[in-house]
Amino acid sequence: MEKSGRSWDGFIEENATLKDIDTAAVNKFKKLAAKRIPLIQGEKGPQAVLQKLNLTEKGKLRRAALLLFGKDPKKFYISAYIKIGKFANDIDIISTDDIEGNLFDQVEKAMEILRVKYLVSNITYEGIYRKDNMEYPEDALREAIINAVIHRSYMGTHTQLKIAPDGLNLWNNGGLPPSIRIDDLKKRHNSKPRNEFLADVFFKAGMIEAWGRGTIKIVDECKKAGLPEPEFREEFGGFSVFFSKGKSGEKVGEKVGEKVGENGEKAESRLGKKWGESVVKVWRKWGENLSKNECKILEAISANPHITINELSEKIGIGTTAVENNLKKLKMKGAIERVGSDRGGSWRVNG
Image (cartoon, rainbow, N blue to C red; front, side, top):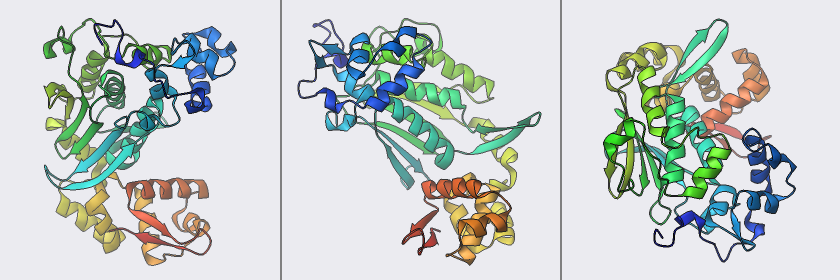
């Protein structure tokens, strides 16, 4: 491909047509790109937008078009997804999710499920405003995930994000260009994207600021959060970013307080006294991610599996919308599930 003068994502996908393009995804991009491509708002229809982005050639779609705006990119590239897994140790897996869709959706879905299901957040206040801080800097994680989907090789296996007790590792298939070394990533360096069309469209969408600075931003954000510098590695035929808790991991437990506690036994004891054994069983699996309201909902559901949203709202003292949002988070975490219909069914707590 290097000899041809174009990157892998610039080649035509012969079997694809405009029917494979998601119009809603194209329209969403138009809003994102309004600042950097003001005239894009005037383009009517997906085909005109794709042509303006140079994602077509002689009326046919480039591979990048399908990854960026396809209804089902996996139909063409089976490994075009992110697998997220949470591990208790090097062997035992607690939970796993596959993040699919176009690349813009993959970034947003991955960040959302990390926030809701997989990572600890501590709550601080700036004046009267509440701020949720994930245990790893959100901007650094987002940048790392964007880099992974842009720079990976789509001819190999899927992208993998592993959450372990001591850190988080994001691996993508395909190593660095020969002219860039690991040491270069923590200083300003030339950008040589594996997939030039993907990088260009992400830039136009305002999701990357300047090529060659993404890894520097990841390092800076970790430093600002008081965490160790992330480790960049070439391994297993690909590229990894390892975020370490280091000594700062202890601070998360202190800030979260009762949710995490100084150690598991003390936290379980406190939860058992306050919420009951059913909540403790769930905490052993998901405890570091359970909020106070989620614990109250689990306690209420354990006592009455047929309890309604209105009854939960009255019992807990929050609005029905807040109840629905908390139920959604608990379902995403796998802590609860609905058995039967919305009207006649019941809740099951997965301890």
